[in-house]
Image (cartoon, rainbow, N blue to C red; front, top):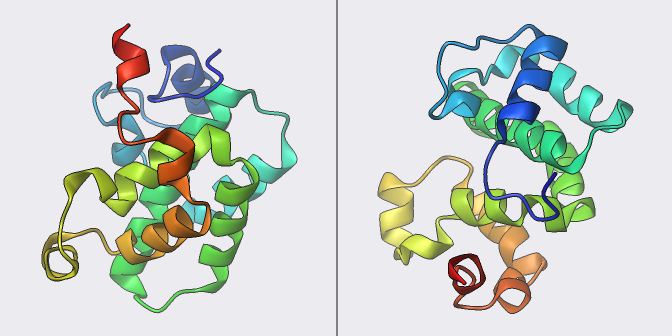
Length: 149
């Protein structure tokens, strides 16, 4: 089990497949493939209700965020579910730093216009969380250096 996950572990993936009866056909980008906006509330309630380990929380949040991105395709102004997701991201910040960075596109070094044109629908919301939590100060500019040593 990782303290600060940076990817979905095989064990967490298998546990979530069993719990939610998810597809196990793809290993690469599995969390995006199994995302399902129609099950978003189920995923969120399960995240809150069960005693998941750190790796399972990371993997489940990856599914939740991808499912929310799909939801925004249907309802661009949705805010109620976002408030729940935002609250979880902030509460379990150390677990979800990588998820926030990925969806905020902060490491892509894009302009506001580039984000507007080619970013995810959730990107502006994730940027708000990134800035609210002051993530750059938490991880530093060279956050990958510790993984290379």
